[in-house]
Length: 172
Image 1 (cartoon, rainbow, N blue to C red):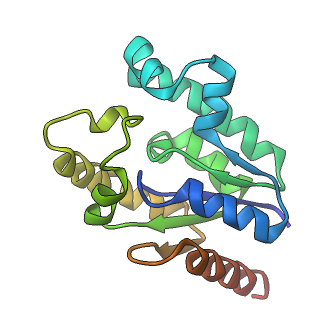
Image 2: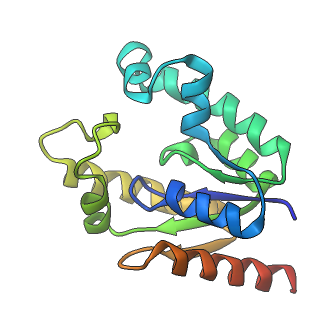
Image 3: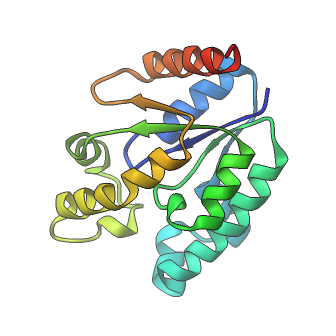
């Protein structure tokens, strides 16, 4: 089996579902944001504050290229990973890409108490999430081999659907 790469907006469940999926598939789990934090010794909000989004995206691109090259893992990516063409190419060549789709309402619900999201440090996070989804949704769809809805669904149910969809792809 090759890698399974999870893309989608913040709050779609990439990390939670990724851990469960990795366990089911008996593959290691990696989270690109956690990898960036481990390598820099700083959390994502600090990187955004000090280096700006551009600096973070440079780090992200390097980590994505490396992780997509390694193979045999479940990889959860950051919500903005699809914004760079180089990342989209790495994702497509790195394994089976699964787009975890979540509505803006679901994203708001899931991210409401999370202080580790620099792009939501605003008076209107709903507008930010809606704008980001409008911009990124076509790019998630462009790289996706599989699209799965996560709204109002338990993570284990989403994991089972991902496995079924991946198996269906491999029998084509």
